[in-house]
Image 1 (spheres, rainbow, N blue to C red):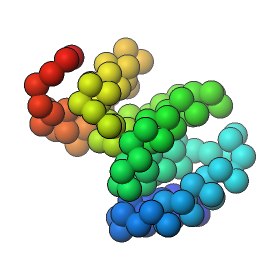
Image 2 (image 1 turned 120 degrees about the vertical axis):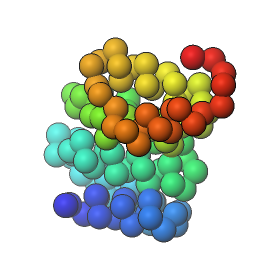
Image 3 (image 1 turned 90 degrees about the vertical axis):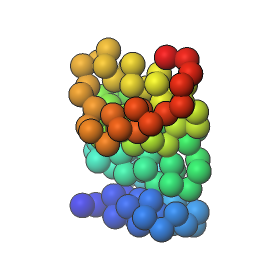
Image 4 (image 1 turned 30 degrees about the vertical axis):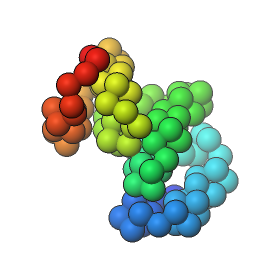
Length: 118
């Protein structure tokens, strides 16, 4: 695993803002074409862990902008980091429309959401 992945995993595990900022700095300094789906997924998890769900979900757009198709892990992390149940459901719908099969952890998170808009 690369430096971004390791730093982001540390941030997600410890929920320390400074660690998430360090991971972001490493991620930002990595050329977009050199970033992997794993880099994005771990960075999304780190942002979610420190309560920055908007940035977490925004990374899906950044990946797409740089030609990287969102993976199941990226969608799963974003669903769990999303700022609202509606955003989580929207992400799940988008993943399904793109043919991305969500992992069981994401499906459980979606099933546990309070009732609301689809």
